Image (cartoon, rainbow, N blue to C red; front, side, top):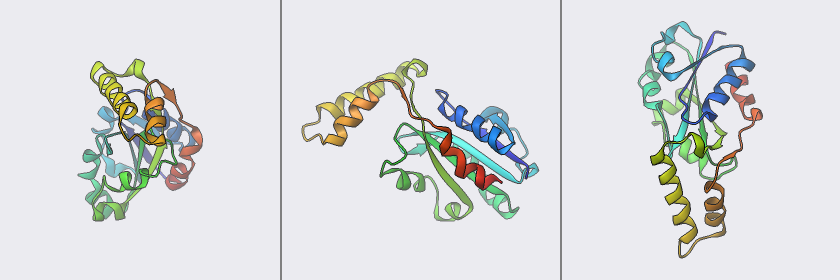
Length: 174
């Protein structure tokens, strides 16, 4: 099966997952700028990876415009989203689902991969917004234990990525 992995990465977590997928599935892996120029009909499977921001998957709208054509042609369409939340976070399934219409959801296989935060690779605005979020969670009047843990977690850089999360994606490609 000829597959292409296209990824959009800001701080490196999505790129890492895309490269792992490319290696394990034996397929080509390119960044979004290169992938957006490709003729997707040349591939049996198109894998798109983006990072999560406020529940959305970055650049997924580009892929969504191509879903009808790819679906009609019988292509496999796979999306993986990389976020800062642990894999077992209860709001991930609904968050992933909310990125797609009912019709799109029928054509796409969607996976979540936990990544992390790298403040050293974020721009000033992103660092500032994350700092404000951490502070607001910790100072919240009715903060839950979950809020306090989240505030502590996002107050510094961390990496919870693991190659094990690509296994179902690679299986879907093959």
